[in-house]
Image 1 (spheres, helix red, strand yellow):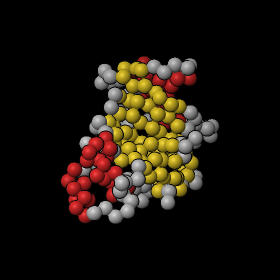
Image 2 (tube, rainbow, N blue to C red):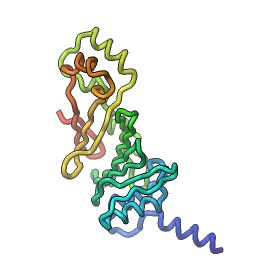
Image 3 (cartoon, rainbow, N blue to C red):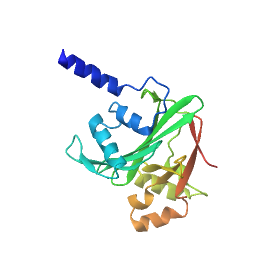
Image 4 (tube, rainbow, N blue to C red):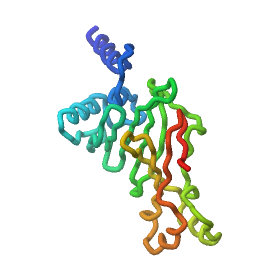
Length: 213
C-alpha cells in the first residue's frame, strides 16, 4: 500500500496543475517526460533550479556520470548545458490561444548543429513542417555563386551544420548561423566566404516561425 501511495504522489507531482495560476518555464522543465532531457531526472532538474534561485550555478551529475548545468533562467526562458557536448534552450510563449514550448537542442560535432521542436503544455509535439523550415546552406548564399564553386562546396559539405539560438532581450527572435568557417580549413573557407551571409534571423508569427526579410 505504501508503494502505491508513493507512486500516486509522484504522479500527482508530475502532472500540470489544474488551477488557472500562471506557469513558468521551470514547471515545464520539470514535467518534460524525458524526450529532451533523458540524462536528467525530475529531481535533478528541480535541484538545478533551486540552486539557481539561491544564487548558485552548480554542475550536477547526470545519468551518464557526466555533469549538467543551468546557464540562464527567467520566467519564460531557460538554457541548460545537459552535457559537455549538448545544450538545450526552452522558450515559453503564447500563440493565439495556445501556450507553446519552443525547444532548441544543439550538439557539438564539434561544429554546433541544432534542431528545433515545438510542444504544447502536455508535451505533445506540433509536427507540421509548415510551422518552421530548418535553413539549409543554400539559404545563406547571397549573390550568384559560380557553378564550379557550388559543386565544390557540395562535395565538401556532405551535410549542413546549422546552429540555432534565441536572441533579443525577450528571446523573441531566433538566429541561425552556418558552421562553414569552423568546418572548412581557413584557406578553403576564403574561397566561399564572399558568397555567404553569416546569419539568418527569424521571428514568431503565431505558431509559425518565419525568416525576417
